[in-house]
Image 1 (cartoon, rainbow, N blue to C red):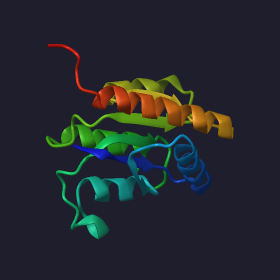
Image 2 (image 1 turned 135 degrees about the vertical axis):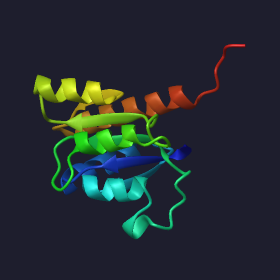
Image 3 (image 1 turned 90 degrees about the vertical axis):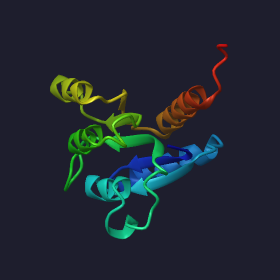
Image 4 (image 1 turned 90 degrees about the horizontal axis):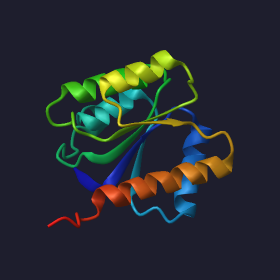
Length: 146
């Protein structure tokens, strides 16, 4: 895992722009790679297509994954991640406007680590960005246990 890379998988250009702006505003200290759909995300993660030269060992520390996307949906991306021995432990937060219990249940079954309702206002983008930063800080801080 690479402690500096967060993969944002989002097909809505406005959401991408607002998410990146919110991360900049809070001083987010990780590199964000954007995949515009599930197919591009899979290419990135499995080092295929335009990402064929990428070092697969530099896996993202976090994947922010939209649920509803064209080509390959978020649940299918999650299914393929969990089936891969090198990526099955990746931390995945699903971002979605879906309030359908079946989507949430399937996400849990497939091993989603977090389910976040998508922001609808800029203040919510800031709040989500802060939550993500806090999550990463907690995951990356050295354990205080002996």
